[in-house]
Length: 422
Image (cartoon, rainbow, N blue to C red; front, side):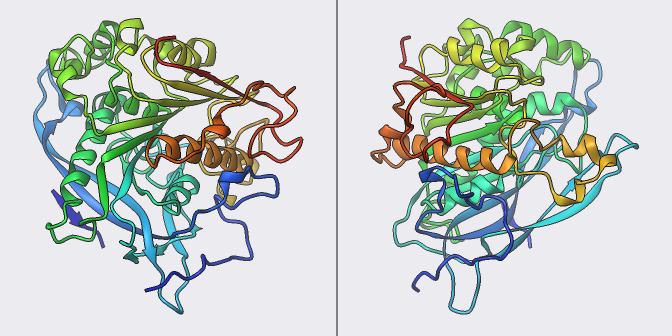
């Protein structure tokens, strides 16, 4: 169920101040915005009769209608006299920690709210984005806007009970991530049909879909794409919930899980995916990941882990053509927008470090992510000749040059690649 919440192309509006996603002087080549202007809309989807795991008793849970707010970025027509600028709303702090009061904040983006879609080259490939725990649908706006400007429909989910504003028990996030993603994919497929009467009609090519996830979003997109959870994860979930087996439908040994794998998913980007260090996956479950996958991680990740975390997932996903981009000395925050200026004060350290990295400029990480995600998805969703950007013979800082990077600007990065079967 889908409900609305609330001519020629003009140049993308310029601002005198830096906005999330703007290119720095040393931004790699593909970080630049694409040829399309960008529109943005907010919709509410309702997934009916879902397991209400937060109200489970003695292993039995009631059902509820699960609302999901989504932000949709798309190629758009900007009328003469209008500028492609919008205001996003988010919050920092915690709804469960009284020492960090929940505080709303806003920031600007380069998109026009409710703009008319540009259907000249539609339908466009679909990208579904899943945030961390907690997070929000605008946490990666630097990337979602950028991809929409390159001819994609980008749908970012507010995962109910897992956002900055409504964080609740972790069992909801464990159960619902992959289910939310697959539900949104189905809804976009329905909404994109040419005769359904909504603004997405004829705009979305859901048969050509990529998933992007960060942290718990990475946990979700890998499972949605075929990496079934382990028996250990099944036991962990049952313990946390006091006996519920609702996660069984996402375990690799369950025939229902195998049948749920959606062939419309053609590629995955997983930023610092959570779970491997806790036994969420094992060798057999990761064999189920068969679509091309681009992993991104910090070598000092102290949330999802690196050697026994993201790197281990990369190595064991033997049936996927896969890449691993590593930010040397980065911790976990290799995906989000930079910290909002409201957090530039000593007493906001905990919330500041929900976004920031100790050894990296977050804006630079954003530009590098834009570059590599553009190359990867351009190959697998738009069939572009971007292979040179991912073919780095010597991927360490000792290399003389990296395709698309300015001289001397690629230090601290490593990119490795394994073909399926290795």
